Length: 139
Image (cartoon, rainbow, N blue to C red; front, side, top):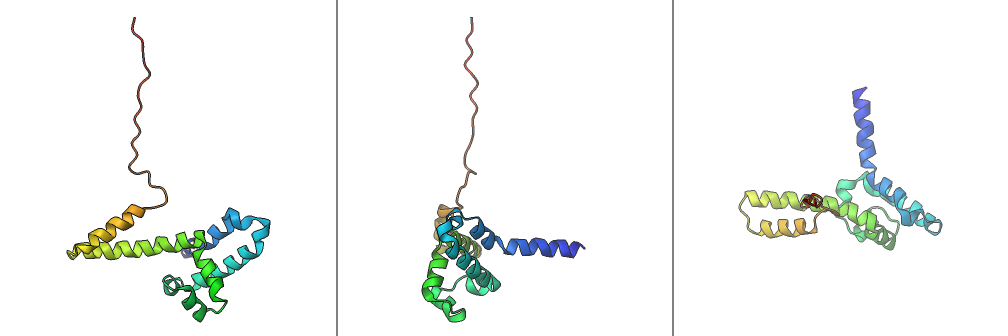
């Protein structure tokens, strides 16, 4: 029973890209329905072998799944898809940079700084809120 619940959660997590595309406001527009269905199909194909596909170009994707180089290029460059894939690439780069730092590689510092400078979409971890009490008049 617990394994079924865990498998369902894992499957749901594996469909994050599909969910993002389904929820994308631009693709929900009536004139973009065909593009939406195409991108959802491409995302399904892409996610089946995500580990293999994450670093492939549109040409390489077309060699393994021939639907058209331009189709893959448009899909891979669509902002929602691009951001999703880039987050995994950045995670891998950070891991390699951290390993390099542990080995004393000085170049890893600049790589880590450039990735951290891009940061996540919104990072409010460095915001401090200060409440100033209301002004009271003394008589």
